[in-house]
Every structure is written in C-alpha cells, then in structure tokens.
Length: 115
Length: 116
Image (cartoon, rainbow over all chains, first blue to last red; front, side, top):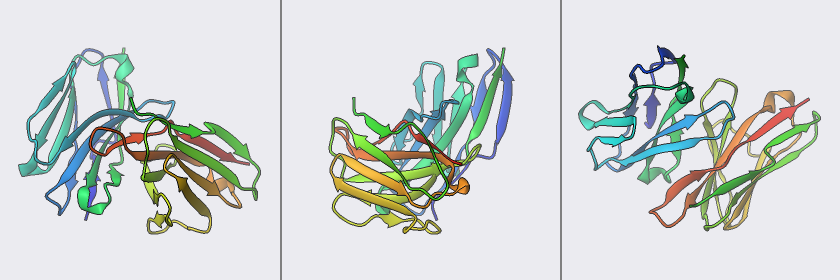
C-alpha cells in the first residue's frame, strides 16, 4: 500500500534554530517520487523538491536540505537557521509511477518559528 | 514556468445549490488532472483523477454523483459540487500533470468553498 507518515504533528522552535521534519513512506513499487511541499496560511502549495527513487543523493538548497534514505524509507527535511517566514504546514508526499502518478500526501507537520 | 490556475479562489453558496470550480493549465497541455479536498487542519485527500476525454476515476468513498468532474479539453478540468451542504465546505485544490520536464505535477492555487 502507498502511505506517507509524518509523525510530528506540530513543532515549535525559536528563530535561528535548526529543525528537521521527518517523513517515512511505504511503497511496493521500485519506481516512485517523493516530494515536499510548503503550505502557508493562504493555502497554496509551494513546491520544494521532487526526488526519484533512484537518486539517493542528499540535496541542499540554501537553508533547506533533504536526506533520502531508502534503507529506512525516509525522506527527512531540515531547515537550518530557521526564520519566522518558514512558519507553515509542510507536507511530504509520494507518487508511484505504476499508480498513475497520483500524489498521496502525509498528514503534514505544522511548523511554528518563534521570534 | 508552467502554471495551473483555479477559479474561483473563494466561493460562498447556499445549501442545496451547485457550484463549479475550474482548473486550467495555462501554458501546457494536461492529459491528467487531479482533484484534492482539504478540511481545516487536515491533509490533502485525493478525490479523483481526471483524464481528458474519459470518465474520471474516483477514490474510494468519494461520491461521483455529488462531485462531477469534467475534463473536456487538454487545458481544462471542472469540479462541480452538486446540491452542496455545509459539510462540503472545504479547500479544493487541483493539480495537472504535464509541462516540458518529464511529467511534472503542478498545483493550482486552490479554491475555498463555504456552503451556508
């Protein structure tokens, strides 16, 4: 079954701290994509990253970094030197090529960055 | 870059009426579009997969007669909430697959529906 688990419902950190959002996924397919999206209060989904199952290289983009570990079926997201503008709900998601590429979302982690 | 636009962004309708939400791919053709619903403080739940020129595929538990989906062209899919009730109030968001970079998925801005 296709499933995404974000165990952290809500996290609060003080500005400038680093924070890691966890994501664990389940899939029977060998070809799949993993995503992270940011959803601010306005509701729109902001695309952050897409990673295919054959690319386990970690990625860094500015203050954002992602750690993909197939051995543990995890795709964790770290924000370094957090800022108040990072406050949002973050969704991890999975799509399987053999299931029409439809994206299934985790329940999301609500991140509060305190000034 | 590729853009998906939804209209309207906000809509308030009376209970018992129907409301239509449009999802357009603005600069690419989308053979497949997806419709999601998100209740407050919850995740996005996939409602249906919309394929151009054919019937939509609904997820388990989604009433196809209540949520009518039409994908009549390669750039437009519509979701009609028929006989809306207050419990249908939600954030509806679409996504479209296409563009020039290997079947990338693009999300619309979402539509807030309030049924009074």
